[in-house]
Image (tube, rainbow, N blue to C red):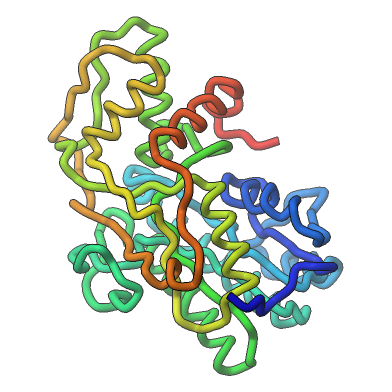
Length: 320
């Protein structure tokens, strides 16, 4: 496929560079002939004045907008205002800042939770705004939908080359393993690890175990994002996924195997399941020439190795 945007000699800023996704993008960009713009101190991207000032002092040709407040079902349910406000402010400030500083391209990172709860499976990009959202993460989803619309609006009104990508559930090094705010896969890795160390005979898992989920290793996501930045230019959103789905029950058993926990998996049906199935259709991305390469079992083993090697940092969620 024809390259539309060359990275050679370009200044690239990854907003959210200290997060799991941001770090993966930086790792991927390290193999390209570009200059990575990095902040020595943290910039509060919710603060418009601070964000505009930093971006004006550190202009970039390409921006990956990966900064976001993220979390699992429990976090979304207990902190709805923060999930909505923080994400709205981050994306509005960075997108407007990109326009003001003349960034040639911006890649906005959305989420597969933008789609309706009852969307036909696998979920095509055209399903956006065709039905009610999943209530357990609707605040985050609304914010991400607003970011998509902002990118589209800036393309239409100002001619900005801003694109939006919607990844499925992510995991990998530097994930959030805090049990109060993490997503299902890192939470299972930590719980299985601690159960093994404690000599526990069982591991409790939220829900019925029946919902199906798709997972993508964050390094695969980073590769896809760089591919889209260089090969795609349209207001139409693009799904990024592995095309492989697994039940939560089987996921728990796969994690237990990777961790070396041999006890029973106990399903707690009193806890919410969330959406029963969520698989994104990646036909558009495959047609462009990109597909996922890392099998889930190997990816989980990789994520667990990182967790075990960085146990204190992983447990607290602190990022150096």
